[in-house]
Length: 86
Image 1 (tube, rainbow, N blue to C red):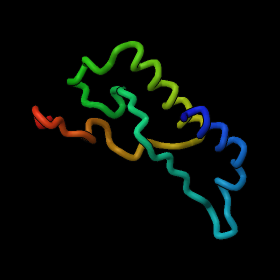
Image 2 (cartoon, helix red, strand yellow):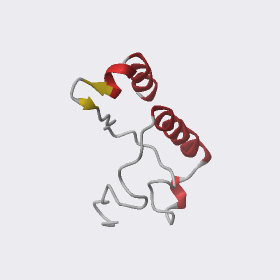
Image 3 (tube, helix red, strand yellow):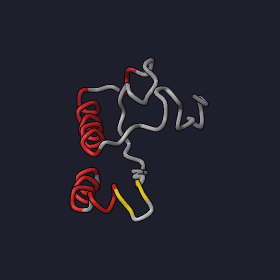
Image 4 (tube, rainbow, N blue to C red):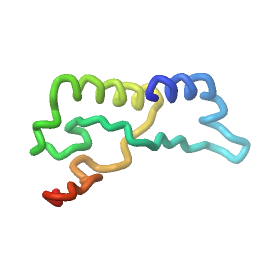
């Protein structure tokens, strides 16, 4: 999905960045299911395997390449476990 979004953004860069009404805004929404200290709790180290970090870095690189920024602050829970409530 990240590759497809990146390719779409590159092919449509002029349209995505400028409209007749002025500057456009681009938002990538989705459950990319990636774990990284940028957005997960730093205490939850079990999530930060080398494999998880590697695939999250691809998302981070794509975002940087497109000039996108994370909207959610680091450590903000986006899921509450049904049993532990954490």
